[in-house]
Amino acid sequence: MPVARRELVFRNLDEVVADIDLLRLKGYDQAGSWNLTQASGHLANWLSYPIDGYPKPGCLMGLMMWMLRNTAGNSWYHKIVTTGKMPAGKPTLKSSIPASDADETAAVNRLKDVAIRLKNYKGEVHPSPVFGKRTVEDVIKLQLIHCAHHLSFLIPKAN
Image (tube, rainbow, N blue to C red):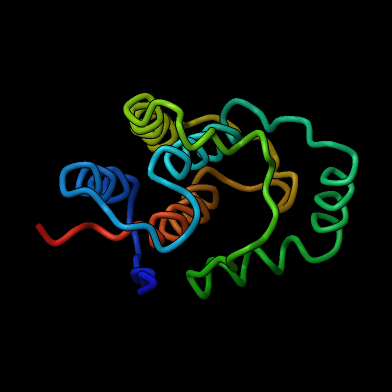
């Protein structure tokens, strides 16, 4: 029988870290195709990009991101933060997804470290390739929703 996603809303990055700790402690069932290593690694990457810079996408993905940023990016950002939801199944940078057999502990620890860095970050953030120039607060709002989106596919076991 398929596993249903959970409803998640994170108010801060500490809640994201607590949820990941819960998943590691209890174990989890997957309602999607990514495991905790992939979700943690992907989220760590996207939390770090506004601070460290975004990777260069390939031609097709770069063109798609440019078009979004220059047409619907701003309204899409506001829709996501207003609804608290990200659409499932949208493309992402392949380089942002670790292999399913990568080191889970390393991926989780990196996510925790980057969450602390972003939470305490006071500088300018790199413009998003999709949403353009944003503040640190804007980035955190979006990333809390992004974290809830991916972690909603991992359901803690009831042991």
